[in-house]
Image (cartoon, rainbow, N blue to C red):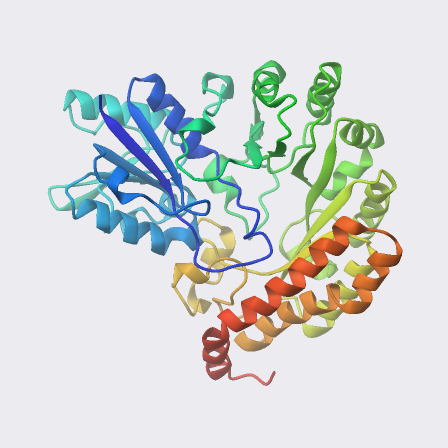
Length: 456
């Protein structure tokens, strides 16, 4: 029996969600498809446990999935595997847009969505028939890089199997089950690479296909995270799924990502809460109107404010995500955003640094202002480009300031007297994580202080 090993490397740095490791879904779908082909499959999620190279190095093929902050580690793993003569195939958002770079370490790169391209690749590999007909594939031939044409996006997501998480080789079981019900996003925010990877059109799994997967976890005690970029994009379809969950009494706790405009439909929020929604992750991004326009967020501060009050009225936790560093941002806008964020009564928040991820429009826009190509710093917690109205160090300070203010002792006391125990626990953890981050990044902070020429 042929053996394939899939690896999801970890990023080197820590942040507020490092404790809550949530593997990406892609390699589980690919692994399940390869298992169904009759291959022996093992999956390693490095955030959950160390890679057992004794198991990896007896594989016929090794597949490595990487996002930008894990790319350095992914390349090190690829180099180690290749030294043992085992072919390496890489996939994921980073190598989709940096395939020439990836081919310095891997034998093959699958760009974009990998399900059908991988099956075509394995067909060619098993038949030794050459790879010219494999869509989305990049590889070296006669000393040059070859990039085969891209397939159009697959609309029939039901053709892909339900994830077999038993393929994972780790010492601890998954506490949170990731499930994806849709792909794509039409909003095309300037700093996001999702549309380049998954397209601008929403594509959905059918309700019955999703329910088939959800039934696997009925009465399991598992927490589910719906991995959609906007779970409530198609409100009719979201309601249909929630009503099906309620009809079968699938009332486990779950969370997902939505835009603030989900609050325009109170019936949808009611169904979400009734069906077990625990937390909504919302990309608020900024409370600076000019920055919202700059990033093409297509929402106003007033709409954000109203949405947070409405969602809070349904007693659903909100994790707000903010981004500092747009060209219209200043220290005044940072202070205003943090002050406003505290008034929104969010359960938790992250204040991130605008990062030029390969594949995003922003990456092309600031290409000449990028100061570091150390991909391990591309985790939205480090400054890697020269902002317009900050020095490198002052933008980093803006993020540190934001977390310190949002998770201040005073704010924690307010959560205590309101008996917001989950929010209070997260605040303690966030304060500890932020202090630990500053200690771990002491050398980095010193470096960007030296690199900064503008007054702090």
